[in-house]
Length: 389
Length: 125
Image 1 (tube, rainbow over the protein chains, first blue to last red):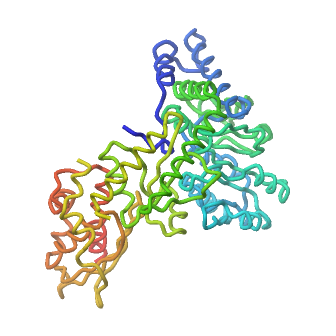
Image 2 (tube, each protein chain N blue to C red; image 1 turned 45 degrees about the vertical axis):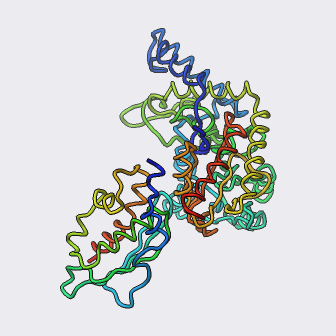
Image 3 (cartoon, one colour; image 1 turned 120 degrees about the vertical axis):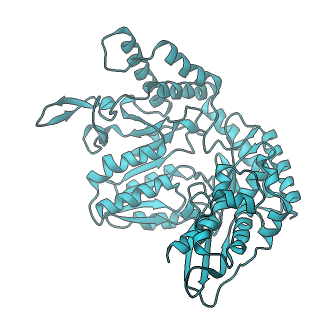
C-alpha cells in the first residue's frame, strides 16, 4: 500500500497507538471529578498532555483549547469571539484558497452578525495576491483576517510573518486567525512568534489520533474576556446558582465543557513527542525534498497539469489529468494500491475560480519516501492504458 | 474491483454519451451538483401531453467516466417511459444498467448523480 493521502489524515505511528492503549489500560478515570487515586492520575496525565501539546506549538498551556479538529476550532472562534465582537457592517477578510472550514464558518457568522466578507484573490500561479490582500486590509471596519498557513489544494505556503506585520501596521486592532491544519504536520510552529490571535490545527493530520485537534488563543484575549466560552455545562463553571452562573477563572478549564477526550490528548501529546524526536526542522526538510521530487516527476508528464506554485510549497502536489476525471485517475491508482485524494478537497471556490472540475492530490508525511512518488508515477501509466489517452 | 469498473461499455458510454445537448422546447429543467466532487449535470425534459411519460430528454455537464456513462445510459432508459416508473429507480437499477455487481459508497455518488438529477427534475412537476 502506498499511502499518499496524509493531508486528509495521517497514519499513526505505533508509539501513539500504544500511548492511547496504555492510558485506557492503566489510567482511565474522569478528570477533575474524583478524589480517588485513578482520577488524580488521569487528571495529571490530562494536564501533562496539554502542556506537551501547547509547548510543541510554542504556546502556554492555558492558551490551548482541545477540540476534535480544525473545523471545530474555527467554529469555536466564530461563536466565542465573532458573535461578541462583530457588528453589522464590520468586515471579515478571508481568501479564495481557504478550505471550506475557514470559509463557510465566516459566511455563517456574517449572516448572524450582519458583517461582510471580503475575499483576497489568488494569482494565476496559485499564490496569494498580496496586492489584493493590501487592498482588502486597508478597507475601513476590517475586524478579522482569517487565512490559511498552507493551502490544502495548491500546497502554497503563505508568507505569514510578512502578512501579519502588514495587517497589524494597517490596523492595530485587527484579529488574525491562522488555519494551520496543513502546516502543523510539516513545519516548526511557534504561536508566540507568529503573532496571530488564533491558530487552529488538526492533531489527526500530524500523526495524532482521529478526533484530536484544537486551537491556540492569545492569552490576553482569554484573560480580558474578549474570547468567551461557547460550550457550557460541567467542568467549565466557577459556581452555579438558580439565578446565575459564573465561569471558571482557570483559563485551562473555562473552555472545556464536559468530560474531555483524555485518551486523544494523550495520543496527540505522544505525536508531539514523536515529531520532536524527529526534529521539526528535519520534518520540514523531508517534506520539502518529497514535494520537490514529486513536482519534478509530475511536471515532466505531458498528460498532467500540476496546480499551484513551483516553490514555497508544503505537504502536497495536486494535478489535473488531461481528458480523464480526477475520480477515475484515483480509482485506477487505487486498483494498484496507491491511495490519493480526488475531488475539490473542500476548496470549491478555488476550483470554480480556476475552472477545475476536480483535481488529484498526492500528499505526504514523515513516513513517505521518493519510492512512493515513483510508484505514483508508474501507477499513472495505467490510466493511459485504461482510458487510451 | 477497482479496475473492473472500467469495462468497455462504460468507457464507450462515457466518451460518446447519448442524449447530450439541449431541447428546443421542454416542460421542466433542473441542475444538480455532486457535493463530493463538484461535478454537475443539467437536464431538460419534454413530457407527453398528459405529463405522465418522458417524450424527450437532453442533458449537459461534465463528470467522471462512471458519472458520464451512468447519465448516458439512464437518459436513454428514460425515453418513452412513465415518470412514475423512473421515480422508483435506485442504485439497483443503475448497477444493472452499467452491468456492475457492486460499487463503493464514494463511486455510488458518481453513478447516482444522473438519475438523481432526472428524478429531482421530475419531482418539480
